[in-house]
Length: 127
Image 1 (tube, rainbow, N blue to C red):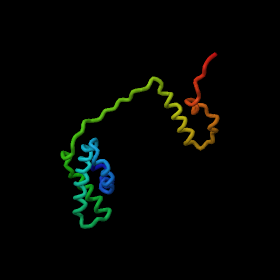
Image 2: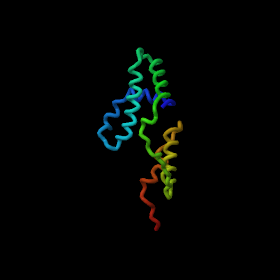
Image 3: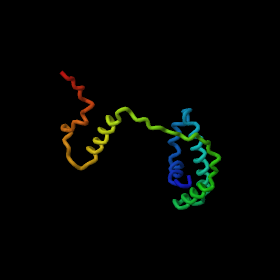
Image 4: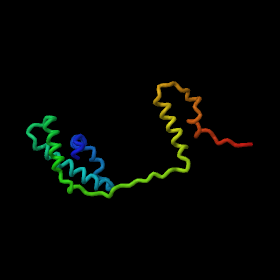
Protein backbone atom coordinates (compact mmCIF):
# COMPACT_ATOMS: atom_id res chain seq x y z
CA UNK A 1 0.00 0.00 0.00
CA UNK A 2 2.79 2.40 0.76
CA UNK A 3 4.06 2.02 -2.80
CA UNK A 4 0.70 2.90 -4.36
CA UNK A 5 -0.92 5.84 -2.59
CA UNK A 6 -2.97 6.57 -5.71
CA UNK A 7 -4.65 3.18 -5.32
CA UNK A 8 -5.48 3.95 -1.69
CA UNK A 9 -6.91 7.33 -2.66
CA UNK A 10 -8.99 5.75 -5.44
CA UNK A 11 -10.33 3.11 -3.04
CA UNK A 12 -11.48 5.88 -0.72
CA UNK A 13 -12.90 8.03 -3.49
CA UNK A 14 -14.74 5.20 -5.28
CA UNK A 15 -15.63 3.04 -2.27
CA UNK A 16 -19.26 2.79 -3.36
CA UNK A 17 -18.40 0.63 -6.39
CA UNK A 18 -17.91 -2.31 -4.04
CA UNK A 19 -21.53 -2.15 -2.84
CA UNK A 20 -22.68 -4.27 -5.79
CA UNK A 21 -20.42 -7.13 -4.68
CA UNK A 22 -21.33 -7.21 -0.97
CA UNK A 23 -24.21 -9.66 -1.39
CA UNK A 24 -22.17 -12.10 -3.49
CA UNK A 25 -20.55 -14.82 -1.35
CA UNK A 26 -17.55 -15.23 -3.68
CA UNK A 27 -16.29 -11.74 -2.87
CA UNK A 28 -16.72 -11.72 0.92
CA UNK A 29 -13.09 -12.49 1.80
CA UNK A 30 -11.65 -9.96 -0.61
CA UNK A 31 -14.17 -7.30 0.40
CA UNK A 32 -13.26 -7.83 4.02
CA UNK A 33 -9.68 -6.81 3.20
CA UNK A 34 -10.80 -3.90 1.03
CA UNK A 35 -13.11 -2.66 3.80
CA UNK A 36 -10.28 -2.92 6.32
CA UNK A 37 -8.11 -0.72 4.11
CA UNK A 38 -10.91 1.77 3.39
CA UNK A 39 -11.94 2.12 7.05
CA UNK A 40 -8.34 2.54 8.22
CA UNK A 41 -7.47 5.25 5.71
CA UNK A 42 -10.87 6.97 5.93
CA UNK A 43 -10.24 7.45 9.65
CA UNK A 44 -6.86 9.02 8.85
CA UNK A 45 -8.45 11.45 6.39
CA UNK A 46 -11.39 12.23 8.70
CA UNK A 47 -8.96 13.37 11.42
CA UNK A 48 -7.46 16.02 9.16
CA UNK A 49 -8.27 19.62 9.94
CA UNK A 50 -7.43 20.66 6.39
CA UNK A 51 -8.36 18.49 3.44
CA UNK A 52 -6.16 19.94 0.75
CA UNK A 53 -4.52 17.58 -1.70
CA UNK A 54 -1.16 17.90 0.02
CA UNK A 55 -2.53 17.11 3.49
CA UNK A 56 -4.57 14.14 2.26
CA UNK A 57 -1.61 12.73 0.36
CA UNK A 58 0.64 13.16 3.38
CA UNK A 59 -1.92 11.49 5.67
CA UNK A 60 -2.24 8.55 3.28
CA UNK A 61 1.54 8.17 3.00
CA UNK A 62 1.99 8.23 6.77
CA UNK A 63 -0.94 5.88 7.25
CA UNK A 64 0.48 3.45 4.69
CA UNK A 65 3.77 3.28 6.59
CA UNK A 66 1.91 2.49 9.82
CA UNK A 67 -0.74 0.19 8.34
CA UNK A 68 -0.88 -3.08 10.29
CA UNK A 69 -0.67 -5.75 7.60
CA UNK A 70 -1.72 -8.43 10.10
CA UNK A 71 -5.28 -7.05 9.87
CA UNK A 72 -5.56 -8.36 6.33
CA UNK A 73 -6.66 -11.90 5.67
CA UNK A 74 -3.91 -13.90 3.97
CA UNK A 75 -4.75 -15.71 0.76
CA UNK A 76 -2.80 -18.55 -0.81
CA UNK A 77 -0.54 -17.47 -3.63
CA UNK A 78 -2.24 -17.98 -6.96
CA UNK A 79 -0.29 -19.94 -9.52
CA UNK A 80 -1.17 -20.15 -13.16
CA UNK A 81 0.17 -22.45 -15.79
CA UNK A 82 0.13 -21.72 -19.47
CA UNK A 83 -1.05 -24.73 -21.41
CA UNK A 84 -0.20 -24.45 -25.06
CA UNK A 85 -2.75 -25.63 -27.55
CA UNK A 86 -1.74 -28.13 -30.22
CA UNK A 87 -1.74 -25.42 -32.89
CA UNK A 88 -1.40 -22.03 -31.18
CA UNK A 89 -0.68 -20.36 -34.51
CA UNK A 90 -4.35 -20.82 -35.43
CA UNK A 91 -5.10 -18.13 -32.87
CA UNK A 92 -1.93 -16.07 -32.69
CA UNK A 93 -1.14 -15.52 -36.36
CA UNK A 94 -4.55 -14.03 -37.26
CA UNK A 95 -4.59 -12.13 -33.96
CA UNK A 96 -1.18 -10.53 -34.52
CA UNK A 97 -1.98 -9.66 -38.11
CA UNK A 98 -5.28 -8.14 -37.01
CA UNK A 99 -3.34 -5.93 -34.59
CA UNK A 100 -0.94 -4.93 -37.36
CA UNK A 101 -3.81 -4.24 -39.74
CA UNK A 102 -5.70 -2.08 -37.24
CA UNK A 103 -2.76 -0.16 -35.80
CA UNK A 104 -0.50 0.62 -38.75
CA UNK A 105 -0.94 3.75 -40.80
CA UNK A 106 -0.90 1.93 -44.12
CA UNK A 107 -3.98 1.25 -46.19
CA UNK A 108 -4.70 -2.43 -46.66
CA UNK A 109 -7.64 -3.68 -48.64
CA UNK A 110 -9.46 -5.92 -46.18
CA UNK A 111 -11.04 -7.91 -49.04
CA UNK A 112 -7.57 -8.93 -50.22
CA UNK A 113 -6.42 -10.22 -46.86
CA UNK A 114 -6.96 -13.96 -46.88
CA UNK A 115 -5.69 -14.73 -43.40
CA UNK A 116 -8.67 -13.00 -41.72
CA UNK A 117 -11.14 -14.96 -43.79
CA UNK A 118 -9.40 -18.24 -43.10
CA UNK A 119 -11.91 -19.26 -40.45
CA UNK A 120 -14.94 -18.25 -42.51
CA UNK A 121 -14.16 -20.33 -45.60
CA UNK A 122 -15.35 -23.93 -45.76
CA UNK A 123 -12.59 -26.54 -45.83
CA UNK A 124 -11.26 -27.45 -49.26
CA UNK A 125 -12.31 -30.84 -50.58
CA UNK A 126 -9.84 -32.57 -52.86
CA UNK A 127 -11.22 -34.38 -55.89
